[in-house]
Image (cartoon, rainbow, N blue to C red):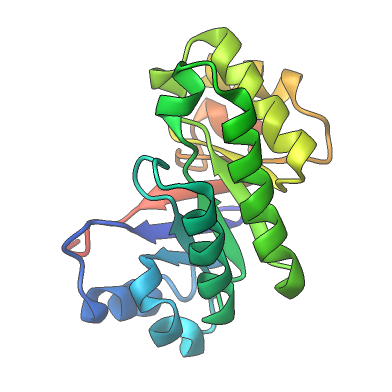
Length: 194
């Protein structure tokens, strides 16, 4: 068992309700949070795990109002954490204000239920300045954490050095990976089969 909290995720587009419930049963003793598709949030609330879901999955390209509605619905269904996927197209187009508005909208939608917002940071798709820009926007808009979806010690170290201490960092790695030293939580994908 990891000494750091673990979030297990089942985000396959064809994952079923049965698999979402099985995720919670399988990891009830070893995980703190289960991340499932928004459709299944209410169905796994009784699992004993905190429930997270994704907003803007998988590309963040929905308009800002739709993202806000999606976030509000997810928290109304019981999600205590929203993993937000930012609009990469807007970021790469230099539309930083559009990205900031979307992040702020999701954070604001989560606020009435005190749900946390964790911003997915697509490390490999971003240039260094874009990474810093997105991390800065997350901090300025009130996100509680960033999720680094790569198990790379250098990337984790670079991001941790850039972030203020009060911003958490979730990393997709095992507890014995060098990158885990920089994480406050670990992220693990589950395929629904093993």
